[in-house]
Image (cartoon, rainbow, N blue to C red; front, side):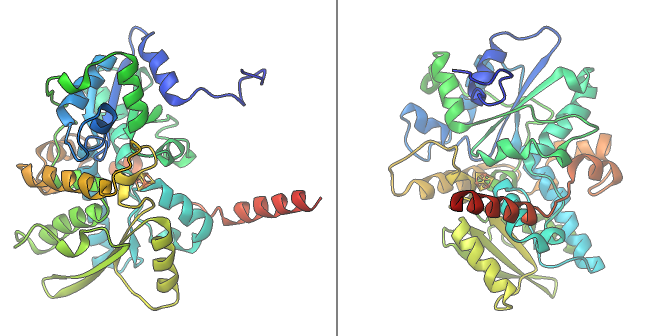
Length: 393
Ligand code: SF4
């Protein structure tokens, strides 16, 4: 029951809001969905399919049948993130920026950093997450292309993660005063909507994403698994810095499910030390050891969930002990089967820069695709102290 007279206490879960919205669509509004890299390798489990099944085409078909006008691929935005973050890394390397540089696409990690490790604020890449890059591009570039106002687009993200729901409410994520992502639903919530609508998921045809924000590379797909952002960034940073093709695309040393993994990459004589950590216990251990001076790296990828987004809190629950391995394998298969495997080769990304963003890290790219972080440690301590006092009293 809704006990609060202004409805502030009781909030309908997001899937209910999205369900209601799609069943009472307003004329003149455009309904857009985007799907994160790890959703396609897990959603099938909601319908009894084998863990590790890649259901991209059926997922796109199901989302269309729910009533969305456009279905875009967050993998496209992951490619865009690599362009912005990769060039930021190159810029820091060439101009002596803050090191180590940390990835910034996991809002679980961003929250942890702001609350517990605020001294690292300037070390995080300023690149927004793929979810927020996609929504920013949809409400500007795409809105202009189809001739609608940004406020007439309703943007729904389908994510593996509950922290993504919180990310969209951050004031520094607004673009020109507009909230770019309107709703976030998890993989499980998507499953609920598809079942509620009676859509026969398993028997659906394979459908394609819409364009121009639906083309992606294998590098973008890798964002779904721990180590993937690092691997994707290295593919681009190496080739941009050297002007040469990578001799081997796969970076085995950053793959796998060990809690912390490290590697040294030789980029034309310059050695870059990188590390990957996933799961908060591993992340805290790595950060403590870095703080104590026991470890040093140039570039670090952090994911709050074990396995990265394939193990996100909004993914289907599974009793399979190998679930992370199976979902990770599916992500690697998507990369292997991709015709394009480097973010900087994505033709629609190249076009987006040509038509709209000019170049990576340009003024407009910064305005739309980058963010900043705050020190929330004092507020957290204050709240903890207050709680303790309340307990004593
Ligand atoms: Fe969300 Fe977890 Fe992925 Fe971070 S690792 S973005 S918290 S699902």
